[in-house]
Length: 554
Image (cartoon, rainbow, N blue to C red; front, side):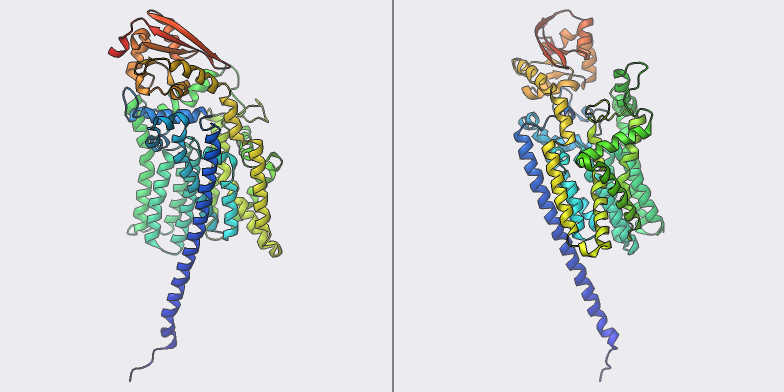
């Protein structure tokens, strides 16, 4: 007769199966929650696209037009190739635009910029929910996703070629992966820890190739990952190998960009000190002896301008200070939260980064309520949106724990306040949208008037034109960039500046640009046909070369 097993041995498999079943059920629940967030985000960004595209607002930002231009000229230029990516803006956003900008109509109406930004917006909404869900119940994580996803400024940007939705998604997912890396190390799941580091490396490399903010953000995220890994340091451990790969990835990415600049523009730091860098532009546009802008060489003032831009972009003005206080309180609670809640403090990094950038990096921020009472680079404040959203949820969750009697009502009340905030901001126009309208008010009519004149030029005839300022005119007229001699084709451009009449049958000179200077020095064989002027934009002059076929032989 067989001997009966001890009762503990008989029950152990049942306990293991129950634990696995509970874990599977939890994963299914989390997956369903994320699916709801994904669906809601998709509906919101589609609604935004319908509204903003229907009103013709996709190309209000000159930077959106420029991003589409850079992506387009990689394949549509006299000398197509990756050199056309330029040296100042990082390449990933333009590479993502290339599949969409190849369609002429999408380039013209701005729809080409919508797809990457919409996907990034949805990814950001899922990411902020997943990040919050690491430390709180679904109802509070949903508040973070609501505050983030219902921001009218972000919804507008999700329909444009601007880089903010992409970079915010990269910021958020870096924090998500770091939080989950910490959890996997705590539970001693070596395989998962190694995979998460590889994923983290991919996201951070993408951030490095999206914005220069990403260089600092990647360094900070790497430092956190290193701190977590060193607690389990073992040269034979696969987690250590993954950390070495992560380190190599993050060292290689910026070096590749410097190598590209060195090869194409003969200076590895051309993006930092070249003729189109922020410093060079500031030096050209600032009067000698005057302070370029508020916050210049003053980090305190610079930080105040950045933070105020962030506040005004996130909530209505009466609640701006309250939002910051709640965010600070939520941050303190995050530090005290088990399971490495302190990792979420990484989302505060944009504040010191932009305080330094404004003070010493020649990156001004103007807001309408402070001198010079204008709009410029207000979109940078949007990088605080993930921090506002997450730490607001931390604060509401903590309040519910302190006052159990309001646990059922606090998420509902907070949701209603977020909806009201969205409605007020949308009705008053989001800060970044106000900037877009203000700065497009004279540019778009000027480019439209010039586009009408350009449409009269016979298709296929070459045009000499400086495109970095008003490429929107070519865009509206549907003129392929390969029909132009422009500054993107350096050798042809230098020759054209010496002989503008021989460079192309048609020459477009806009006040203050290089073509105007070239014509002033070499006016021979050019016939002025028309002048188009715009408010605050100067005048565009269209010349016909008397050497009618010279452009086709250049």
